[in-house]
Image (cartoon, rainbow, N blue to C red; front, top):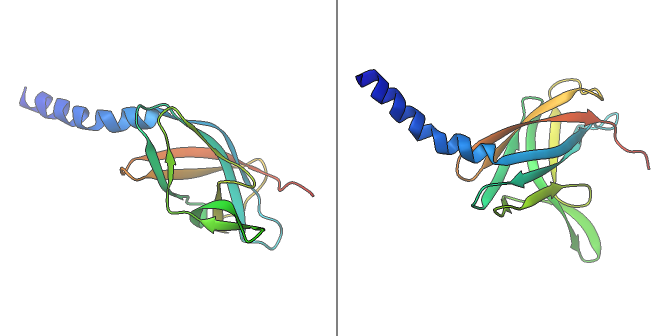
Length: 144
């Protein structure tokens, strides 16, 4: 009986964390295969926060890349620039869109060959210590 009570307490402790991440839903996304000779690329996705509270995205990581940064395009002195951002808040019931020309992931130094059609596992990190594992397909860089 004592072991059952301990196990029950452990399950109760972790239930809110599991429930919170279940309320985050990846709608779609992609990571672009870097151009030949380049070691940096971008990742895009749409994430829905179905929880009753705002959450704050503070980072991302992947075993496929040396490191990942959160970036945003901004206008500075009439020019568009990419800047790293420390955190991005997603309001309760809101959808966050990472897209070209806006918020996006910058993925640096691939640690493995990247082939169109393969998938990349990425872990999103939140300010409250929770994480969300997502899988994004590798797509070709669009031609201009």
